[in-house]
Structures are given as structure tokens and as C-alpha cells.
Length: 245
Ligand SMILES: *[C@@H]1O[C@H](CO)[C@@H](O)[C@H](O)[C@H]1NC(C)=O
Ligand SMILES: *[C@@H]1O[C@H](CO)[C@@H](O)[C@H](O)[C@H]1NC(C)=O
Ligand SMILES: *[C@@H]1O[C@H](CO)[C@@H](O)[C@H](O)[C@H]1NC(C)=O
Image (cartoon, rainbow, N blue to C red; front, side, top):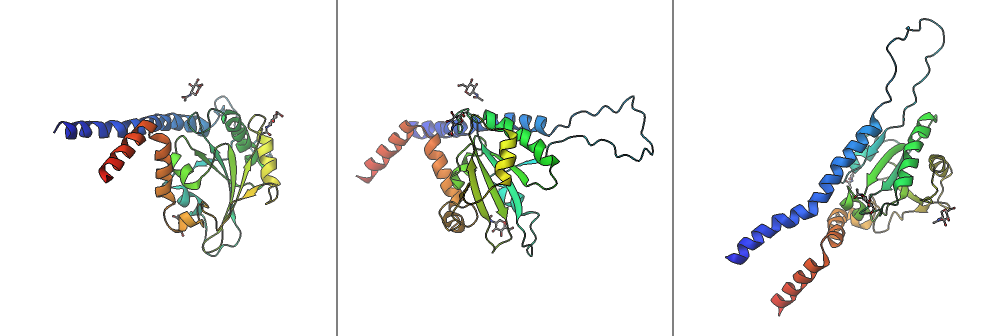
């Protein structure tokens, strides 16, 4: 009796301990996104409307929209605008980032560069869709893709059964600038970037784990391995081995 009530107490506690930090980060991250997406105020008051000058009004510089990819929504985000008959890939450039838990605080510089790059991409006549994953917020997604932080994924999305190729590039996290990101993307090739093997294990769309439908469960598994303290593991293993004997 005692044991069962103790277990009933302990389970929600464990769950709260596992979820708590991420919930907190999520809230923070939404604040961050809010400020990211906020438009610079345009001074409209006291301005005489310009009539018929024949010139276009000066364009307000805004960053290119960055879509946050989540475990539940990344596939929809990538595929929404894909028509079944299209043969030209829809290009995505995704920053895989993290804070203290997954990037050990080394992603600050690349985050700043990314923000700068989002302004630079907005100025270009053609640029990829921009995506963002923070592995502190999306640990299961990152684990299911076996994605490390501080890297860029260039994803050329094509309607299935056509293959969606993915190139991965790590830029120098201590020196990276927005221009580095724009240049690296513009000059990307399978020589200078690492291609994720379409028939390999972890390719999010064509990989073995994805096609077997086990990528997400594995993501949870690897995530749990990282999150569960080792003493809980040891207690679990000792219970298991005792009950087997
Ligand atoms: C992603 O979406 C595409 C197109 O809607 C679909 O064919 C594919 O099965 C989806 N993949 C996953 C892993 O959900
Ligand atoms: C990340 O780690 C640094 C240094 O250890 C600390 O100052 C900072 O508060 C931490 N940030 C978060 C969000 O926990
Ligand atoms: C990044 O750049 C710094 C400064 O140029 C250099 O010292 C460091 O070795 C570089 N790191 C990598 C991983 O190339």
C-alpha cells in the first residue's frame, strides 16, 4: 500500500521534472519569437502623404519570415506549398540551434548571424524558405533526426515519390556572420556540404527509421536516455534484473 501511494506520488513528480524545464523554455522562446517577428515601428504621424511623385515609397526593410519547425508540424510546414506535379524543389534553409541544454550556450553567435541573414535573404530576388529548430524546445525532433545543434540544413523539398535531398553544413560558431550564411547557402554543393544519405538511417523523410515509422519513438527513446538521471536508470535496471532472476 505504502509503495503504491509512493509510486503514485513519484510518477507525476518525475513527469513534471521532465517537462518543467522545456515548458519554461518554450514560453521564453515564444517571447523571443514575438520580438523577432515584431515590425519596426513606422513613423506615420506627421507625415504628409506623398501624392503622385511617380516614385515608389521607400521599402521598409523587414526580415524574411522564419518558420519554427516542431515535432508535430515540420512535415506540414515543409510540404504545404508542394504540388504533387511540381518538379522544381521548394528550397528550405533550416538553422538547428539550441540553448544551454543542447548547444551548451555556443549558439548565441549563430543565432545573431541568423537574424542578420534573415534580413539579407529578404533583400535577395530569390531566397529559400527559412526554418528554425531549437533543440532545447524540440529535443524529440532533434533526436529523431539525429540532428546536432549549430548546423544548417538545406532541404530541397519535392513531392513524394521524388527524393527530397538534404545537405548539412556547420559554420564556424565563433566567427559566423549573416553574410557567411547567405554565401554558404548560395554556393552549396554536395562537395562543400555533407549530404544526408537518402537510404541511410536518419533521413527524416526517406531514411529507414522514418519509412519504418520508428523515427519519432526512437526520438523519444534517445531523449529519455539523456533526460532520465543515471540513478533512475540504475534503479530501473536493478529492478528489472531482480525480477528476471
Ligand atoms: C509528409 O507529408 C507528405 C505530403 O503530405 C506525406 O506524403 C508524407 O507521408 C508525410 N511524411 C511524414 C513523415 O509524415
Ligand atoms: C546558460 O548558462 C549560462 C552559464 O552557465 C547561465 O549564465 C545562463 O543563465 C544559462 N541560461 C539559461 C537559459 O539557463
Ligand atoms: C573558428 O575560427 C576561429 C578564429 O578564426 C579559429 O580559431 C577556430 O579554429 C575555428 N574553428 C573551427 C572549428 O574551424
